[in-house]
Length: 210
Figure 1 (cartoon, rainbow, N blue to C red):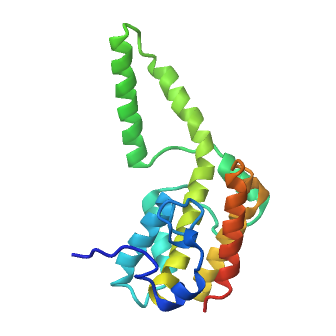
Figure 2 (figure 1 turned 30 degrees about the vertical axis):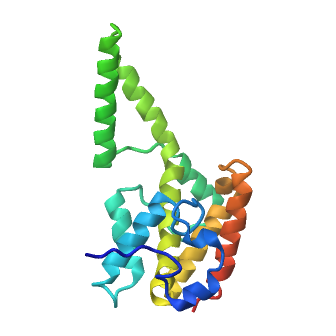
Figure 3 (figure 1 turned 90 degrees about the vertical axis):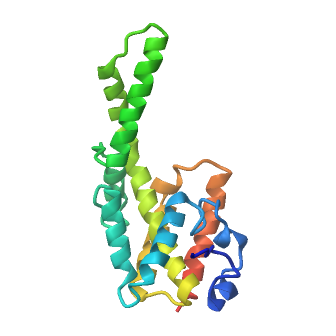
């Protein structure tokens, strides 16, 4: 049974040498490469995939991952603020089977609650409420994809002591995108400044990776 757990001790020597800040290895630091849910899932998924795909570009793993997530398509090389705004503010059709199942469960919960309180459940109002929340999902989708890109980039280095040139470029783009005012300003201080500091450090350390 594979009991691998990401840590300094299990990392490649090159990664131990240059990833000196604790946040790189944190399983809970949201701005770290592996601390978000998306980043953690992407890293462990990539590690498993890599065991049987050693000669294939990690970009293929990311491509397949985003298809499986069923997120609206986005140009991952995009840094144009207007196009990013269009993506994160677009009304999103929630077609992901897991999300649809969650919505169904929520509706049944609210129906039961209304029944217990002797009230009539307004299904139309519920659907309108869920539809309005879909307007805010674009930023979540983009953050999830950027987290995964950064995680796989740093993950390849942690596992192999190297990072492919095209993956490094994409990881730098993802970090630069998350540092744009349109995205970084979505966070509140003091965490916002922490995020800026950590993303900036990650951007600099990528240049030390060969």
